[in-house]
Length: 632
Image 1 (cartoon, rainbow, N blue to C red):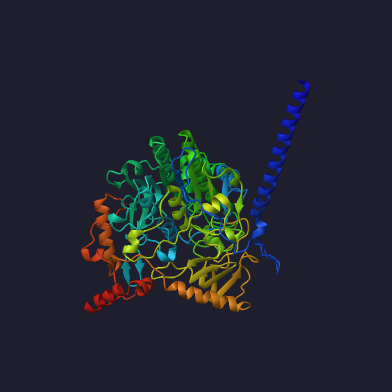
Image 2: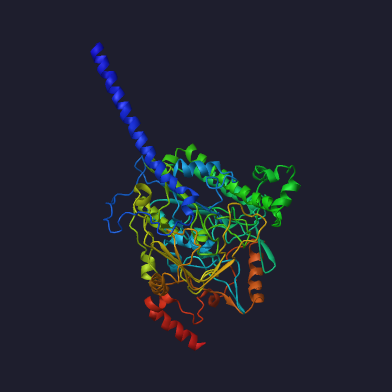
């Protein structure tokens, strides 16, 4: 017996030693990859420096044909959390001044960071790419608002996604998912067929456009201040009167609604929730509890004090800058608080282990324009620019569906470059479906660009945009701020005047004026993102060979540009104001779909500025439009 006991003890010791060795190897591998997140990696590299990459010609790893399922054999729940104007340097794991304990934990210890995740440079195009599965220049590069003046006429731009395209919630509903939306829509609001519940969502509580007051939910256009808050529980939508009268913080309404949805949802049915946050977009308003987390606001005691601070912007002098900065950080702290409640709600129903949660931003933080409080250091640029600070955003994935061996990693290498448009294919793969859009094909609209990220997320394979990623390819209605942007491998091409081309330090606002507000890339600016990730050295004159190749490719991409058709074009703002007055009357002081558009105004507007896509893919449509113009 003693000899047998000694053998057993020796065997157990050997097993323990092997386990310790495996843990050491695993930790060393994870630590090496996680170390790439240090800001030094984003600073200009010395001349001649080159990162070793796997062969670009290596055969792809074998893909699983079966849909991804959770531990119980069911399709996973999917929750997409989209922050609004969150800066690269606006989270705690990069900036210790910001208090985001939940985000820090989920991103750095219990999740996978996608630090090569790219968006469009402004709000609506990123959302259009996400929900349509198309790169922005194939769907929409404009921000639809309650009104849009254009030159001497007022044009209500449809914006958002063409009705002929199948949106992500529609694709997931076909695969058995319940679909819900919360927060900012920004994909068109001119007619009732453009609202979320007509585009695949079962329910929606949120607002149509952007920059609404966080407390009273008002948005002013043409001197009309209306409430932008809509609710549709699946039985017919309308003004959210039961929510708006409480003067409650917008994202508090949406977070509480998320908790209610989870509490009432049967866990066995696959769920998709798209929560598009209002924070930390301007105006700078935060609940007192979160302002009080920061030293600059520790003296706030009464409601009068904190309402004043929230509803009124401060200046940018050196004395006031810390307070302005704390206002923004307090909004990010509320965002962190909300994400913590999302996590707890899912875990309370035992749904976390069956979920994939994605957290991302729609573009970089705003610097030099808008609220002028975002900071994307050490990246150059901000919202509106195709510099990295405008288009490379915070993103991570977490939840029980993410393999444990991927926790704590940070994919910083450009071979893991991905686009916000790629989540469409990723979620369809998780749901076990075929990636297609028959409706769009029938109408000869641009096809899906989306490619699944699951091999990158679960196995570390190359991202679908490692070789090429178009950023801005101007179409008829592209947002001002960039004449064009294209990434190929290690090089980036920027064209035209780049707005918000700023170079910030780690602390901003700091009382200084950000510079430069515009970079003039008339001939084209060329940057090597491997050696110069901060984009401070223009190589256009040194590498004219690369510049010409990329300019040629950019001209090819321009032939495929597409934008959602415009409609409701009026001769002046007075005509538009009459329609807004009808909206105000019909919805009792709320914004909503226009109810007074004539048949002519609902039809697509033709002005001779034909779509590049239509010229090359639907020439018969262009000819019909030419005849329509001649007949006028």
